[in-house]
Each structure stands twice: as structure tokens, then as C-alpha cells.
Amino acid sequence: MITRQLHGSGDEREEPAAMILLYTVALAMSAGMSMATCATVFKWADVMRDAGHGTMFMAFVCMCLWSISSLMRIIAVYLNDRDDTLANRTILNLSIPTEVFYNAASFWFALIAYEIQRRALRPRTASSNRTAMIWYTAVIFGAAAVLLASLFVLDCFNVIVDDDDEGIVEQKRLVRYILEHVSWVTQGIRSAAVLYAGGMALWLYRKRGLVAFEKLPRALLGIVTLFFLLNVPDLIVDPLCDFKVIDTDVYPFMPSVVKFIKFSVGGAISLLMGGSVAGFDVFFHVARPRSRLSPATSGNSIAAAPQNLDFFVISDASPTTVMR
Image 1 (spheres, rainbow, N blue to C red):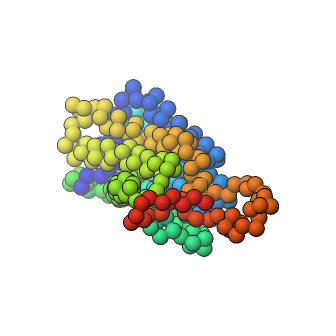
Image 2 (cartoon, rainbow, N blue to C red):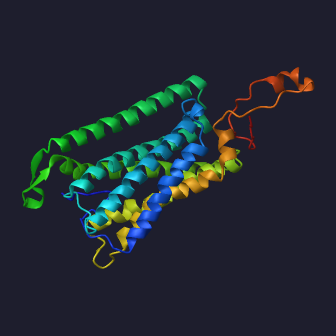
């Protein structure tokens, strides 16, 4: 069985020296910009109030944590003479949170796609939004916490197992054995999230004549599409390198370029997100100060009614924009 190190090279190859600066810049930008997006674009009061707003926020939190742990891991790789191997204790320890936060981000992005589609078809009530966010947060972060704690406990007890992969018996730490084999599960989770997000983006594009969306939905469509495009190369090229379909001796920089693209996801999506703040406030019903109603409108039941309608609706007739 071919084992993989999803955030390493898959075959413990030596990282090209020329990539250290590119990796560092990409991960530093992704971490910093994801953190800035969490602090400036989102409002904590609305995170648990609206499932769309909350899933977006949590995805950026996980991207930030993954970028930070990946940056620390890359530094450890280069301090290890550019040898990306889980046999190194420091790289192994940093691979644990890297793997966990990578999976958590995948789940949150899949939920983002679901919540966008749900809002277009069956908008949630206020209580449904809160319930959904409580369940999402409890399940994803609960599972992440259990996995983190379990792997670190196994590492602390230094449990050793015999790995007879390819007929060669080798003693390994149990936590290393788990990471090498669970990385295929990680690959499957990210693949499912990317394909679902891509399918949702295609669905929105095909419904563009029926879904009345202005700046925001276009930006939202762009974010989901960008997530799809920046992850596809890694999901295709990395397994091909593992199975020796692509010879890394002939094309040594191919997996490194793909990894650089993956490391840039957080920064690229943050840039697109930052340019659409006003639209996201409308779409996610973010509370903003309202001006007082004038006497002429105070008696108007329509003007005085709570404005809590959805940003867009689907109609079989002509597109109709419903603004709150």
C-alpha cells in the first residue's frame, strides 16, 4: 500500500532549496490575511446567528490555523536539511495540527457551499440558523479536538508498531503510522469538499438567469470557484506523483509548484473576500446602525416592518431582487 504525507511530499523527497522563500511568503500571507479577514470582515455577534456568516468565519479561522502550522512545519523541514519526513520528531509533531486543521477547513468549505445553496432554495429561520451553527461547531471542532488530543497522547507514550509495508518490516511510532495512512482519508475529504463546491458554483452559474444576484453573489461565486481551482492541481498531481505516474526525477519542481498553489489559497480567497465586504454584510444579514425613521415613514407599516428578507430568490419568471 502506498502511504502518503499529504502536507509533505508523499515520497520523502528533498524539497528544492529555491522553494523556501515562495513557501514562506505564501504561508505567511495566507495566515496573516486570513487572520485579518476574521478580524475585520466578520462580526462575532453574527457568527452564531447566521449559518452562512458563521461557516465563512470558521473556514477562515481554520485556514489561518492551518497556514500557521504549515509555516512552522516548512521551517522544520528546511532545518532538517530539506528532508520532508515524519521520522523527524519535530516534523511529526507539527504534522498533527496541520492535518487536523486541513480537514476542518475542508468540512467548513463544504458547509459554505451547502449554506449558499440552502439560502437560495430554502432560507433558514433565525432559530434554525442558531441550531445549525451549534451543531456544525460542536461536531467539527469536537472531532478536531478529540483527534488532536488522541494523536498527541499516542506520541507522548511513544507507542511503537511494526509496519510491514511492501514486505519490509520497519518499526515506527504509532502516531506516524496513523498519519501516513489517514492522509488518504484527508485526501478524500478535501476532494469531496472541492467537488461539491465546484458543483455548487456551476449550479449558481447555470441559474444566473433565475437567481437575482448583483455584486455579492458574483463575489461569492468567485470565492467558491477560486477554492475549487486552487485545490484541483494538488488533488490531481500529488496522487500521480505518489503512484509514480509523474516522475519527480524528470519533473522535480512539479509537486513543489502545486504545493505553492495550495499554500496560497488563504491569501487569494482573503483578497477576494476583502473586496466584497459591503455585499457580504447584506447577504449575511450583518447588523448595522440604522437611521431613525422620519415622521412621514414612521406610520408606514411597510417601511417600519422588520427588514429581514433574503438577498436573492429563485423564480420561474423574470429575476427578482429582494433586498433587505
